[in-house]
Length: 395
Image (cartoon, rainbow, N blue to C red; front, top):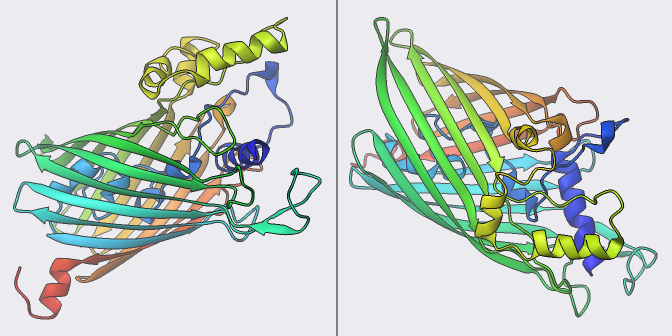
Protein backbone atom coordinates (compact mmCIF):
# COMPACT_ATOMS: atom_id res chain seq x y z
CA UNK A 1 0.00 0.00 0.00
CA UNK A 2 2.80 2.39 0.94
CA UNK A 3 4.32 1.91 -2.50
CA UNK A 4 1.03 2.80 -4.19
CA UNK A 5 0.72 5.89 -2.02
CA UNK A 6 4.20 7.00 -2.96
CA UNK A 7 3.44 6.32 -6.61
CA UNK A 8 0.44 8.61 -6.70
CA UNK A 9 2.12 11.35 -4.70
CA UNK A 10 5.03 11.20 -7.11
CA UNK A 11 2.68 11.19 -10.10
CA UNK A 12 0.93 14.34 -8.90
CA UNK A 13 4.15 16.12 -8.07
CA UNK A 14 5.67 15.15 -11.40
CA UNK A 15 2.64 16.10 -13.43
CA UNK A 16 1.85 19.37 -11.67
CA UNK A 17 5.28 20.69 -10.76
CA UNK A 18 7.95 19.12 -12.92
CA UNK A 19 9.29 19.62 -16.42
CA UNK A 20 11.59 16.91 -17.72
CA UNK A 21 15.27 17.80 -18.06
CA UNK A 22 17.89 16.21 -20.28
CA UNK A 23 20.56 17.31 -17.82
CA UNK A 24 20.44 17.90 -14.09
CA UNK A 25 23.35 20.21 -13.41
CA UNK A 26 25.24 19.16 -10.28
CA UNK A 27 22.15 17.24 -9.14
CA UNK A 28 20.61 20.50 -7.84
CA UNK A 29 17.02 19.59 -8.70
CA UNK A 30 15.29 19.74 -5.33
CA UNK A 31 11.58 20.68 -5.34
CA UNK A 32 9.55 21.05 -2.16
CA UNK A 33 7.13 18.11 -2.04
CA UNK A 34 3.81 17.67 -0.25
CA UNK A 35 0.79 15.41 -0.19
CA UNK A 36 -2.58 16.56 -1.62
CA UNK A 37 -0.88 18.50 -4.41
CA UNK A 38 -4.27 19.22 -5.96
CA UNK A 39 -4.79 21.96 -3.36
CA UNK A 40 -2.18 24.03 -5.21
CA UNK A 41 -4.09 24.02 -8.50
CA UNK A 42 -5.78 27.36 -9.21
CA UNK A 43 -9.40 26.32 -9.78
CA UNK A 44 -10.91 29.28 -11.68
CA UNK A 45 -10.39 31.01 -15.01
CA UNK A 46 -9.98 34.68 -14.10
CA UNK A 47 -6.84 34.26 -11.98
CA UNK A 48 -5.77 31.42 -14.27
CA UNK A 49 -5.80 33.80 -17.23
CA UNK A 50 -3.58 36.28 -15.37
CA UNK A 51 -0.65 33.96 -14.63
CA UNK A 52 -2.27 32.54 -11.46
CA UNK A 53 -2.57 35.78 -9.49
CA UNK A 54 -5.38 36.72 -7.13
CA UNK A 55 -4.21 37.71 -3.65
CA UNK A 56 -4.92 41.41 -4.25
CA UNK A 57 -7.04 41.59 -7.41
CA UNK A 58 -10.48 43.17 -7.17
CA UNK A 59 -12.92 41.09 -5.14
CA UNK A 60 -15.12 38.59 -6.96
CA UNK A 61 -17.04 35.39 -6.27
CA UNK A 62 -13.90 33.24 -6.62
CA UNK A 63 -11.89 35.00 -3.92
CA UNK A 64 -12.20 31.97 -1.63
CA UNK A 65 -9.11 30.32 -3.14
CA UNK A 66 -6.97 33.43 -3.55
CA UNK A 67 -7.88 35.55 -0.52
CA UNK A 68 -11.24 35.25 1.29
CA UNK A 69 -10.64 38.58 3.06
CA UNK A 70 -11.69 40.30 -0.19
CA UNK A 71 -15.35 39.32 0.07
CA UNK A 72 -16.58 42.30 2.17
CA UNK A 73 -15.43 44.55 -0.71
CA UNK A 74 -17.66 42.78 -3.25
CA UNK A 75 -20.31 45.00 -4.82
CA UNK A 76 -22.84 42.18 -5.12
CA UNK A 77 -24.68 40.96 -2.04
CA UNK A 78 -24.10 37.29 -2.93
CA UNK A 79 -22.82 35.09 -5.72
CA UNK A 80 -21.87 31.57 -6.75
CA UNK A 81 -19.61 30.01 -9.36
CA UNK A 82 -18.80 26.71 -10.98
CA UNK A 83 -15.34 26.05 -12.45
CA UNK A 84 -14.01 23.13 -14.46
CA UNK A 85 -10.45 22.31 -15.49
CA UNK A 86 -9.49 19.35 -17.71
CA UNK A 87 -6.06 18.81 -16.13
CA UNK A 88 -2.85 17.61 -17.83
CA UNK A 89 -4.43 16.95 -21.20
CA UNK A 90 -0.99 16.37 -22.74
CA UNK A 91 -0.58 13.28 -20.55
CA UNK A 92 -4.04 11.78 -20.01
CA UNK A 93 -7.64 12.56 -20.87
CA UNK A 94 -9.50 11.74 -17.65
CA UNK A 95 -7.91 13.91 -14.93
CA UNK A 96 -10.04 16.92 -14.02
CA UNK A 97 -10.74 19.46 -11.29
CA UNK A 98 -14.21 20.79 -10.47
CA UNK A 99 -14.78 23.66 -8.03
CA UNK A 100 -17.92 25.30 -6.62
CA UNK A 101 -17.60 28.57 -4.67
CA UNK A 102 -20.01 31.07 -3.18
CA UNK A 103 -20.38 33.94 -0.73
CA UNK A 104 -22.99 36.02 1.08
CA UNK A 105 -22.35 39.48 2.54
CA UNK A 106 -23.81 40.03 6.00
CA UNK A 107 -24.69 43.68 6.28
CA UNK A 108 -22.09 46.09 4.94
CA UNK A 109 -18.98 44.89 6.75
CA UNK A 110 -18.74 41.10 6.81
CA UNK A 111 -19.29 38.02 4.68
CA UNK A 112 -19.41 34.25 4.86
CA UNK A 113 -18.05 32.14 2.02
CA UNK A 114 -17.21 28.59 1.09
CA UNK A 115 -16.08 26.26 -1.64
CA UNK A 116 -15.97 22.59 -2.57
CA UNK A 117 -13.28 21.22 -4.89
CA UNK A 118 -13.15 17.72 -6.33
CA UNK A 119 -10.03 16.40 -8.06
CA UNK A 120 -10.30 13.12 -9.98
CA UNK A 121 -7.30 11.18 -11.25
CA UNK A 122 -9.48 9.11 -13.57
CA UNK A 123 -9.13 5.36 -14.02
CA UNK A 124 -5.84 3.79 -12.96
CA UNK A 125 -5.07 0.14 -13.72
CA UNK A 126 -3.10 -1.97 -11.25
CA UNK A 127 -1.14 -5.11 -12.06
CA UNK A 128 0.32 -7.79 -9.82
CA UNK A 129 3.77 -6.99 -11.20
CA UNK A 130 3.57 -3.56 -9.59
CA UNK A 131 1.62 -4.14 -6.42
CA UNK A 132 1.75 -7.13 -4.15
CA UNK A 133 -1.77 -8.43 -3.66
CA UNK A 134 -3.38 -6.43 -6.47
CA UNK A 135 -5.35 -8.36 -9.04
CA UNK A 136 -4.11 -8.04 -12.59
CA UNK A 137 -6.32 -5.71 -14.58
CA UNK A 138 -7.88 -4.15 -11.46
CA UNK A 139 -8.96 -0.53 -11.95
CA UNK A 140 -9.16 2.06 -9.19
CA UNK A 141 -10.43 5.64 -9.31
CA UNK A 142 -8.38 7.81 -6.93
CA UNK A 143 -9.72 11.21 -6.00
CA UNK A 144 -9.32 14.08 -3.55
CA UNK A 145 -11.73 16.71 -2.32
CA UNK A 146 -11.65 19.68 0.03
CA UNK A 147 -14.56 21.48 1.69
CA UNK A 148 -13.97 24.86 3.30
CA UNK A 149 -15.77 27.83 4.82
CA UNK A 150 -14.56 31.29 5.81
CA UNK A 151 -15.71 34.37 7.68
CA UNK A 152 -14.40 37.79 6.63
CA UNK A 153 -14.92 41.24 8.09
CA UNK A 154 -13.92 44.81 7.41
CA UNK A 155 -11.93 46.28 10.28
CA UNK A 156 -11.89 49.70 8.60
CA UNK A 157 -13.02 51.20 5.31
CA UNK A 158 -9.82 49.99 3.65
CA UNK A 159 -8.76 46.85 5.56
CA UNK A 160 -10.31 43.43 6.15
CA UNK A 161 -9.34 40.05 7.56
CA UNK A 162 -10.65 36.51 7.19
CA UNK A 163 -10.31 33.14 8.85
CA UNK A 164 -11.23 29.87 7.21
CA UNK A 165 -11.46 26.15 8.00
CA UNK A 166 -10.90 23.30 5.58
CA UNK A 167 -11.58 19.56 5.60
CA UNK A 168 -9.32 17.57 3.27
CA UNK A 169 -10.03 14.03 2.08
CA UNK A 170 -7.66 12.04 -0.13
CA UNK A 171 -8.38 8.53 -1.39
CA UNK A 172 -5.47 7.43 -3.56
CA UNK A 173 -5.90 3.66 -3.12
CA UNK A 174 -9.67 3.29 -3.50
CA UNK A 175 -9.64 0.94 -0.48
CA UNK A 176 -8.53 -2.03 -2.55
CA UNK A 177 -6.89 -3.89 0.35
CA UNK A 178 -7.45 -4.22 4.08
CA UNK A 179 -4.55 -2.05 5.23
CA UNK A 180 -5.34 0.85 2.92
CA UNK A 181 -7.58 3.71 3.99
CA UNK A 182 -8.32 7.25 2.82
CA UNK A 183 -6.40 10.10 4.41
CA UNK A 184 -8.04 13.04 6.19
CA UNK A 185 -6.75 16.35 7.47
CA UNK A 186 -8.01 19.66 8.82
CA UNK A 187 -6.51 23.04 7.99
CA UNK A 188 -7.07 26.75 8.53
CA UNK A 189 -6.50 29.91 6.48
CA UNK A 190 -5.62 33.40 7.71
CA UNK A 191 -6.00 36.23 5.20
CA UNK A 192 -5.73 40.04 5.04
CA UNK A 193 -6.68 42.54 2.37
CA UNK A 194 -6.05 46.28 1.98
CA UNK A 195 -7.97 48.25 -0.63
CA UNK A 196 -7.67 52.02 -1.17
CA UNK A 197 -7.27 54.72 -3.81
CA UNK A 198 -4.08 56.47 -4.86
CA UNK A 199 -3.55 59.40 -7.23
CA UNK A 200 -1.37 58.83 -10.31
CA UNK A 201 -1.23 62.20 -12.03
CA UNK A 202 -4.84 63.27 -12.29
CA UNK A 203 -6.21 59.71 -12.17
CA UNK A 204 -7.70 58.12 -9.08
CA UNK A 205 -6.47 54.53 -9.20
CA UNK A 206 -7.35 51.53 -7.11
CA UNK A 207 -4.56 49.92 -5.09
CA UNK A 208 -4.79 46.58 -3.34
CA UNK A 209 -2.49 44.49 -1.16
CA UNK A 210 -3.30 40.95 -0.06
CA UNK A 211 -1.87 38.20 2.12
CA UNK A 212 -3.17 34.66 2.51
CA UNK A 213 -1.57 31.88 4.57
CA UNK A 214 -3.51 28.78 3.61
CA UNK A 215 -3.63 25.15 4.72
CA UNK A 216 -2.18 25.63 8.19
CA UNK A 217 -3.10 22.33 9.74
CA UNK A 218 -2.49 18.72 10.56
CA UNK A 219 -0.25 16.41 8.61
CA UNK A 220 -1.94 13.69 6.60
CA UNK A 221 -1.52 9.93 6.99
CA UNK A 222 -2.49 7.19 4.57
CA UNK A 223 -3.32 3.72 5.85
CA UNK A 224 -0.36 1.34 5.93
CA UNK A 225 2.23 4.09 6.40
CA UNK A 226 3.79 4.88 9.77
CA UNK A 227 4.80 8.41 8.71
CA UNK A 228 2.66 11.46 8.06
CA UNK A 229 3.07 13.78 5.08
CA UNK A 230 2.92 17.57 5.07
CA UNK A 231 -0.04 19.23 3.39
CA UNK A 232 0.73 22.25 1.13
CA UNK A 233 0.78 25.11 3.62
CA UNK A 234 1.32 28.18 1.45
CA UNK A 235 2.13 31.86 1.86
CA UNK A 236 0.74 34.14 -0.87
CA UNK A 237 1.48 37.88 -1.10
CA UNK A 238 0.08 40.10 -3.83
CA UNK A 239 -0.37 43.66 -5.06
CA UNK A 240 -2.77 45.13 -7.59
CA UNK A 241 -3.10 48.50 -9.33
CA UNK A 242 -6.22 49.42 -11.33
CA UNK A 243 -5.98 52.40 -13.67
CA UNK A 244 -9.18 53.89 -15.17
CA UNK A 245 -8.67 55.53 -18.57
CA UNK A 246 -12.19 56.87 -18.94
CA UNK A 247 -15.75 55.96 -18.05
CA UNK A 248 -15.63 52.69 -19.98
CA UNK A 249 -12.03 51.52 -20.08
CA UNK A 250 -9.74 50.44 -17.26
CA UNK A 251 -6.57 48.42 -16.92
CA UNK A 252 -5.25 46.39 -13.97
CA UNK A 253 -1.82 44.94 -13.31
CA UNK A 254 -1.15 42.45 -10.52
CA UNK A 255 1.73 40.47 -9.06
CA UNK A 256 1.82 37.56 -6.61
CA UNK A 257 4.63 35.78 -4.77
CA UNK A 258 4.10 32.27 -3.37
CA UNK A 259 6.17 30.13 -1.06
CA UNK A 260 5.34 26.70 0.30
CA UNK A 261 5.75 26.71 4.07
CA UNK A 262 6.90 23.09 4.06
CA UNK A 263 10.41 21.85 4.89
CA UNK A 264 12.61 20.54 2.10
CA UNK A 265 13.08 16.78 2.11
CA UNK A 266 16.66 16.07 3.27
CA UNK A 267 19.28 15.07 0.73
CA UNK A 268 21.78 12.32 1.31
CA UNK A 269 25.19 13.66 2.27
CA UNK A 270 28.40 12.34 0.75
CA UNK A 271 29.46 9.14 2.46
CA UNK A 272 26.28 8.89 4.54
CA UNK A 273 25.10 5.32 5.10
CA UNK A 274 21.53 4.16 4.44
CA UNK A 275 20.91 3.75 8.17
CA UNK A 276 22.21 7.20 9.06
CA UNK A 277 20.28 8.84 6.22
CA UNK A 278 17.02 7.10 7.17
CA UNK A 279 17.48 8.13 10.79
CA UNK A 280 18.18 11.74 9.82
CA UNK A 281 15.14 11.90 7.51
CA UNK A 282 12.95 10.61 10.33
CA UNK A 283 14.35 13.12 12.79
CA UNK A 284 14.57 16.19 10.54
CA UNK A 285 11.45 15.66 8.43
CA UNK A 286 8.84 13.12 9.48
CA UNK A 287 9.04 13.85 13.21
CA UNK A 288 8.53 17.60 12.68
CA UNK A 289 5.18 19.08 13.67
CA UNK A 290 3.34 21.19 11.06
CA UNK A 291 4.12 24.43 12.93
CA UNK A 292 7.79 23.53 13.32
CA UNK A 293 7.83 22.70 9.62
CA UNK A 294 6.54 26.19 8.77
CA UNK A 295 9.41 27.88 10.61
CA UNK A 296 11.99 25.43 9.27
CA UNK A 297 10.85 26.08 5.69
CA UNK A 298 12.50 29.52 5.80
CA UNK A 299 16.04 28.28 6.48
CA UNK A 300 16.45 24.62 5.51
CA UNK A 301 17.41 24.79 1.82
CA UNK A 302 20.66 22.82 1.27
CA UNK A 303 22.29 25.70 -0.64
CA UNK A 304 21.36 28.40 1.83
CA UNK A 305 19.60 31.72 1.30
CA UNK A 306 19.97 31.64 -2.48
CA UNK A 307 18.00 28.41 -2.70
CA UNK A 308 15.40 29.74 -0.26
CA UNK A 309 14.75 32.60 -2.70
CA UNK A 310 14.43 30.05 -5.51
CA UNK A 311 11.52 28.46 -3.64
CA UNK A 312 9.45 31.59 -4.27
CA UNK A 313 7.15 31.39 -7.29
CA UNK A 314 6.36 34.65 -9.09
CA UNK A 315 3.27 35.54 -11.09
CA UNK A 316 2.35 38.72 -12.94
CA UNK A 317 -0.90 39.41 -14.73
CA UNK A 318 -2.90 42.10 -16.46
CA UNK A 319 -6.59 42.63 -17.18
CA UNK A 320 -8.32 45.03 -19.58
CA UNK A 321 -11.98 45.78 -18.94
CA UNK A 322 -14.46 47.49 -21.23
CA UNK A 323 -17.58 48.85 -19.53
CA UNK A 324 -17.17 46.14 -16.88
CA UNK A 325 -18.67 43.73 -19.44
CA UNK A 326 -15.84 42.44 -21.61
CA UNK A 327 -12.42 41.38 -20.29
CA UNK A 328 -9.09 40.43 -21.81
CA UNK A 329 -6.34 38.93 -19.64
CA UNK A 330 -2.73 37.80 -19.87
CA UNK A 331 -0.04 36.74 -17.42
CA UNK A 332 3.18 34.91 -16.74
CA UNK A 333 4.16 32.42 -14.03
CA UNK A 334 7.77 31.64 -13.14
CA UNK A 335 9.29 28.95 -10.96
CA UNK A 336 13.01 28.24 -10.52
CA UNK A 337 14.33 25.42 -12.70
CA UNK A 338 15.54 23.34 -9.77
CA UNK A 339 12.25 23.78 -7.87
CA UNK A 340 9.86 22.54 -10.56
CA UNK A 341 10.44 24.77 -13.63
CA UNK A 342 6.79 25.69 -14.13
CA UNK A 343 7.18 28.57 -16.55
CA UNK A 344 4.18 29.49 -18.63
CA UNK A 345 2.27 32.30 -20.30
CA UNK A 346 -1.49 32.52 -19.81
CA UNK A 347 -4.27 34.20 -21.75
CA UNK A 348 -7.92 34.60 -20.95
CA UNK A 349 -11.17 36.37 -21.71
CA UNK A 350 -14.45 36.99 -19.96
CA UNK A 351 -17.94 38.23 -20.67
CA UNK A 352 -20.26 39.56 -17.96
CA UNK A 353 -24.00 40.12 -17.97
CA UNK A 354 -26.21 41.30 -15.12
CA UNK A 355 -27.09 37.74 -14.10
CA UNK A 356 -24.03 35.68 -15.00
CA UNK A 357 -20.47 35.87 -16.29
CA UNK A 358 -18.39 33.41 -18.28
CA UNK A 359 -14.58 33.23 -18.16
CA UNK A 360 -12.01 31.04 -19.90
CA UNK A 361 -8.22 30.81 -19.77
CA UNK A 362 -5.43 28.94 -21.57
CA UNK A 363 -1.85 28.02 -20.68
CA UNK A 364 1.12 28.25 -23.09
CA UNK A 365 4.16 26.56 -21.60
CA UNK A 366 7.56 28.21 -22.10
CA UNK A 367 9.42 25.24 -20.55
CA UNK A 368 10.05 22.29 -22.83
CA UNK A 369 7.89 19.18 -22.24
CA UNK A 370 5.86 20.85 -19.51
CA UNK A 371 2.67 18.79 -19.01
CA UNK A 372 0.77 21.97 -18.05
CA UNK A 373 0.92 23.14 -21.68
CA UNK A 374 -2.50 23.65 -23.33
CA UNK A 375 -4.40 23.56 -20.02
CA UNK A 376 -7.80 25.29 -20.15
CA UNK A 377 -10.06 26.52 -17.37
CA UNK A 378 -13.72 27.51 -17.52
CA UNK A 379 -15.76 29.41 -14.91
CA UNK A 380 -19.47 30.24 -14.88
CA UNK A 381 -20.51 32.73 -12.18
CA UNK A 382 -23.89 34.00 -11.01
CA UNK A 383 -24.79 37.31 -9.34
CA UNK A 384 -27.66 37.12 -6.85
CA UNK A 385 -28.45 40.84 -7.24
CA UNK A 386 -28.78 40.37 -10.98
CA UNK A 387 -31.07 37.39 -10.54
CA UNK A 388 -33.29 39.35 -8.12
CA UNK A 389 -33.46 42.27 -10.55
CA UNK A 390 -34.34 39.91 -13.40
CA UNK A 391 -37.34 38.61 -11.52
CA UNK A 392 -38.30 42.00 -10.12
CA UNK A 393 -37.15 41.36 -6.57
CA UNK A 394 -35.59 43.90 -4.26
CA UNK A 395 -32.21 43.74 -2.59
